[in-house]
Length: 538
Image (cartoon, rainbow, N blue to C red; front, side, top):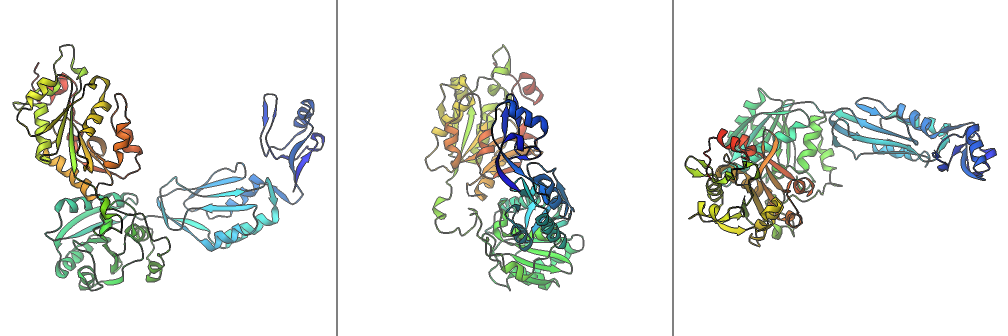
């Protein structure tokens, strides 16, 4: 291929090296110039164009990329049409992307004109994820180079997607007085979510004493009806003969490896009972963030069985992002743990959908109690001494309905401007040491102290480094706990907007806590109040 400037008269059949505009017509880079194009260039007084003139043994970029892509085994992969010398490759199944660095490196060293980029080795992917791209750098490349690339890819796999195989998982969790039941509940929820990507399901959970005998018996029982067993110990594994590895052996199984050079994730146990994997999960696996447990679980679900040599080779790249929930955080993290959650009940709105009669929804009575008092009492029951109520519309009546309750009050004179001003008013009233703000709408009669305590417990499990959101049937609802890290964004809110976009864009993990229908039942109209069993008041 010869690349450079030529006169339009000599450019017929060549490929444009750069886009050219002729009047209202644009000829794109890579366009093969035909006689009409040459005539149009001459008529426009273009004296020179940059082109690539192909030699007999050259292949245009798109054809070269297409031929190379065709040499890749297509199992569980989808290939785009070639364009601008590029073919993108996508997964067609959820699974584990496995790359052969040696083959990829050899291909990229054939010639700088041919490039292959792909994901890192052993990365979990969803169907539709882009996993690799082939790009031809110049506008054409020698056919012999393309043939070398094809031969290499046909001789050995450069990469593949190994689909996940759904499994029926059993959770065995050990109990000690020091481990809160809320933590165990969160563990079950996080594990259930982890298994969803592979269409696996958590079929059972058994909580047993933290003893070798109890764990061994639970493993044997689970093995009769499950094909994956995961053990969460109430206390971390401290030795290859500790409770969990000893229980695997007592159950008749084999312990393949204890420990791994991945942090978080050091304290993992890999064993098996027959052909059934038995995983002793490290404490960090109680968090949804990536940790060493994911690396082993994904391999098992994709049909691989990591050897001790594999596991001991995880050290390079094994230092993952810090997970603040670890009982012994790394140096410099301990002083960053979050302060307590403070609750803000929003009761300042105008209730504009209540109709021309001007009735206030928060003064409607449920079981003889004003709705706003019912909500604030629920908040106080969950966090005594840490509740602030934001008032505005009909402020005197709202405060009268709350007489005698141990809550702080903050007035929002700008309540007519929308929810943002109430959020900011509530935030301004928090103690400077607050690690999070639980935002509760005062018109949600189904929310109880127990619901709020569950949200707070989830936030504490994450050490305040997450947003916690109530959901109903998986659909987002309220209340929500905003981490201290989001407070600056809250202060920038304007108008009748809540914190939804902050939740979605803050970059923190979002932990959904299922509260059922109560998380989506708010009362904005007289009809809704009556349907919920309330009695309207003036």
